[in-house]
Length: 217
Ligand SMILES: Cc1cc2nc3c(=O)[nH]c(=O)nc-3n(C[C@H](O)[C@H](O)[C@H](O)COP(=O)(O)O)c2cc1C
Image 1: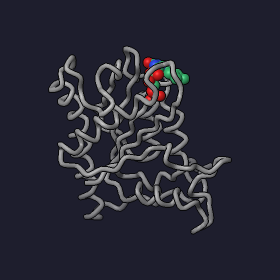
Image 2: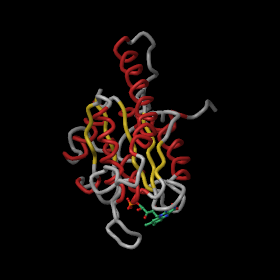
Image 3: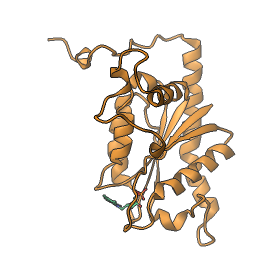
């Protein structure tokens, strides 16, 4: 099983301190996925030169999209599931997550599960961001598993390497993270078997126009 972890924390500003708290949370996710026997790659939006003005990968003529977009599209297509690590900004998911994922068509994500991991420097751990992530990820076709990870005061829970300071109950946190990741592994294994068996045909992807989704007139 191969997973993509999306960091989507682009902030280079203090306060609030520390910046890019999401990197710590993503490191912790990498560690738990590895300890659960899963393979993964981590996607960092700072490493990707997205086209400006906005132009999604699927709207380029075949072979004309920037190589970086094509490469990420291939990674998304090949992955068995996704871990979306997002901060909460103004009670919403990271705009960087929406912007990055909006570059790719839902057919690349469909029929594979996702895990929602949110964090904040405050006491709610990004729970309100998670609510709109469910809608967003469902529309992309990578349905989120029911368990979620929310990390309040993430700066106190994880150090720079995503490991726990002594003040934190590491075993409890690992168990908490694993609940979501074990669901992700369960669903991704089930989806992979179903894709391989091909016993139930998936409906055709909408690739021509958003109007293909419309109810009949
Ligand atoms: C523009 C902005 C909006 C924020 N809104 C919220 C919020 O709605 N709820 C919350 O708990 N924290 C909020 N915070 C604080 C973040 O949880 C904290 O800064 C965190 O470190 C952000 O993640 P990052 O460092 O990966 O960017 C906000 C921070 C910023 C910069």
